[in-house]
Length: 363
Image 1 (cartoon, rainbow, N blue to C red):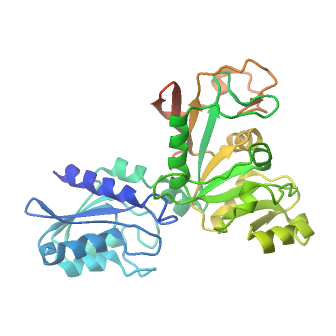
Image 2: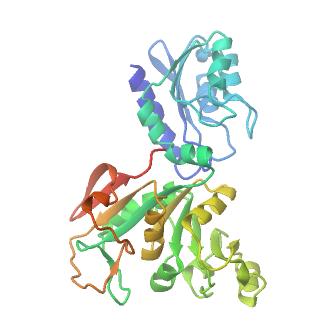
Image 3: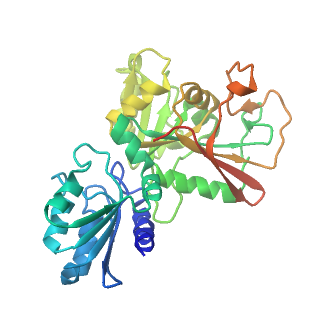
């Protein structure tokens, strides 16, 4: 039964996808005498936490009840009061916790506060599942850089575009719907300037009740123009350009900033490492990034061993042209044993397309 109620908490926690970054996804369920009397989830960044909604719904029924929470209740005052205090005041008898919060302000302290007030605490209930939904949060809290998730669509011979840059459409419509899910899930979406100039994407989350991600363009030489969708349609002020500090003060920089509301992150010179980019995005409180290309950005991220996970969509098409654009290049691997090895592989079927979902890093 404990797993059943924690599964319920996990299910409602995911309703916060795309809305709570850089906070974690959290769900809570209050159970009294085998009956669910309250449910809640963290729904928006800066808003009440899951436990608050669940306990408010339970009301007086919370006294002597159990609460199931996917993440350790907080014990400090932040944007909201501590949830551990709310649990204590409600008269809860037992608290079941999935993940321990890695945030030093919380880690173990919420549980200790509950125990000190005679609340019985059980940890590790569906821990793996609870950890899994907050991989991005855990990475950001521990390392202060975003969780980096790769998405790319390739032909059976590993190409992301023809030699002249044509890439519409390699994957099918069903696979592209999954991409919209990812765009809603992650806080930012990042592409190189080549992808922007070739494809003129909007980089929006076209999903019901979805939230558009921050649109991050890596453009060292500031090659963007104001007719591109990502610039001209920046009504939500979510477009960020990562460029050389040498471009600050130029007429184009000023126009983009003042007339189109573009935000800038500047780095020295014109050649940026992915590590430097992620460091600056972390400073901007961006906890997760969906990397959509192109070849140069993907290759750099792999070579620097910074990709945490991803999904590669493989279509039923064969380009058959050695001059077509590969999704990854620049490696001189001589032995198969030195290959990049994907971990925790999961295969997803999208009609005649296959998605290879994977992990590379332990978080």
